Image (cartoon, rainbow, N blue to C red; front, side, top):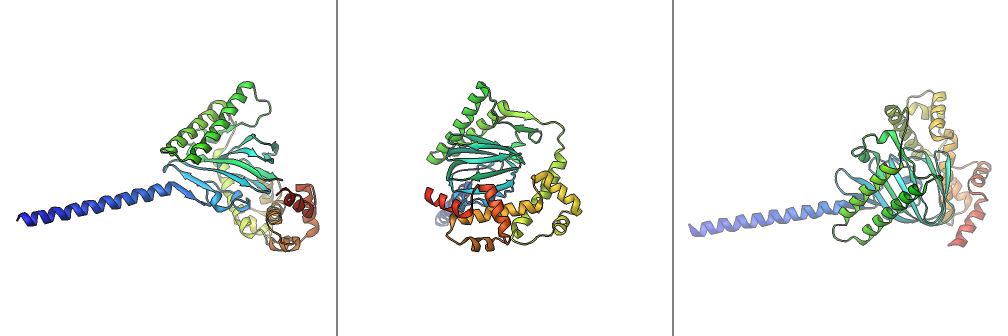
Amino acid sequence: MVAVSLKKKKKTQEKTKKKTKNKRKKVQKEEQKTLIIGASKTGKSYLIYDYLSNFKSNEYLYIDFSDLTKVRNCTLVEKCNYIPNHWHQSIEFIYLIKGERLATIENKSFLLHDGDCVLVNANAIHSMKLMETNTIILLQIPIDFLEQFVPDIQEIIFVLNDSKNTPRKQECLNKVKSILLEMKRVYDAKEDGFLLKFNSLLFSLLFELKTHFSVKMMNVNVGQRKKDLARLNIILKYLQENYKQNIALEDIAKLVHFQTNYFCRFFKKHMGVTFIEYQNQVKLAYVYRDLINTKDSLSMILSRHGFNNYKLFRTLFKKHFGDTPMKVRKHIVEQD
């Protein structure tokens, strides 16, 4: 009887040990999910950025602290680039460590230099143009996360980029920059408990924004705004998949159940350009990327991206980049 009892006890201990081991493995597996390198998505953020930027997959860092908190944070070196009008369902910080870039947000342009920081509000139409290599800290905070702590987030904007900043506002802006730099330091160091520290810095950043930089918007129809953005997401997703083709306005209008004339007005109202102009901007962005990052001939690049009208291409290119394609390529090669 004693031998049987000891045998049972041993089996029970082995089972308990096995369960503990499996549990430990599961915990480790879940902890590994906390940091996902190379994520191509941004939570609830739909980005033209993802398609057009020169970011390599392993340069993206998607930090998921918990089921509630999802932000994208990364420090990266971005080569010359052009990203046409797009928006995010996140607020976005771009802190320029080194370089120069032109940020156009809601038709207002900001020429950024070393040490400058720009905030793009959620759903704000904006574009980026880089004529030289940039090193940036990029932080995106999804709007659905913010809503949990700032219930009226859909009715406010954050005004960080104001040339008329008072000394007090400038002091607060410097604090925002120092928090972003500390977030970078904490993540790079990866010391014990760094995610807790990173999370606390995130909330400090949000507190600064809400307290010193928030402005209430008047007469905002949040429901209609969401519907419009959902339609634009459908349109732009289709465009990204078919940008090389000749897309008939009638076909793209049917996709969102609009009459052609209404679709044209709707698109220009929200994107600032006509659908055809925007399609050409997307093509131009891809052509510029390949011009800078490959040694392929211009004719090969144009053919690859469905740009069949060379005269139109040359006009658009010079308008956006101030010179001919070959001169721009030569200038950037000399920089490297």
